[in-house]
Amino acid sequence: LNTVSQHIATIRMEWSKRFYKANGHLFLLSLLSMLEGKLAGYEDLTKVEGEILLNTLICLRNISNSMDGIKLLTTQSGTLQLILGCIFPPVPRTVDTVLEISLIYLFCDQTPEKQTKTVATLLDTIRKIHRGHHGWKVISNCILENKSTTFHKSIGSFLNGLFMLLQEGDRQSLHVDWALELDRCNVVSALKTIRDPPTIITSFIENFNEDLKCIKSIFPNRSINPFNKKAIFKLLLDQCDPKTLMYNVTLGLIDLSFRNPAIFKTLSTSERVL
Image 1 (cartoon, rainbow, N blue to C red):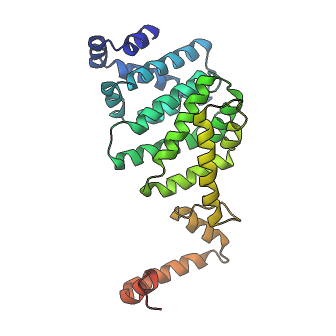
Image 2: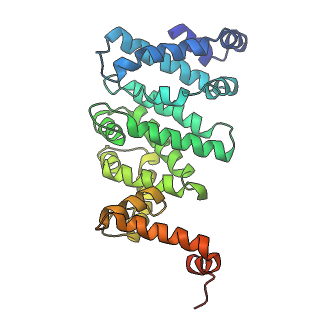
Image 3: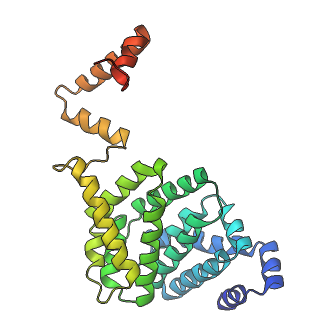
């Protein structure tokens, strides 16, 4: 694996082409698949398996650094989820290596619609990671425990990249959910404990705090994502007594939209006559 990684990293084009043609990238992904159960905690990961995990990820990172390589990886269904599932804090370098690969996934050549799906997949996969803690709390703990400068730069680049992509207009719900989740998991608080942090982290903290302040100003007494329709409906449902009240109101509005579309349009749009 070390030799494979070195050959790919030094851009030996002919060798890389032969490696890809022989489906070497699929072999690397199969190695990660074989370790999934142990990474999930069903069995202990041995030291040798930890080395295989890290070296495989390094190979995949080097593959993703080339246009041909990232194209091959992104055409394989479930690859991003598989790679994100390799965040394994007991082998510290797996974390920054996974984040580096993920950042390339986010910014590789793709349509805006595909990019939104990639961002959503990444956020959902991180949310489901369980390593003693869940989701972003795992990342928060890594920040507290990992003092490596390389890791600090990787996490700073990753968070800044996500922050930038989530500013797009059609990603408001993803953006707000992510910001509130980072706040709940104390990710920024963990970043503030870093001594002499790189500029990329200090700038993220400043931008994120300003962003979070705006989000929380909408409902100061409760952390709510106003763009998440399912969450808002559930919240209203939980507040109702009896529980059927919200359904009755909703069904009443649907009935009105069928029976008298003109009145419904007047009630539900900003074009109503005052």
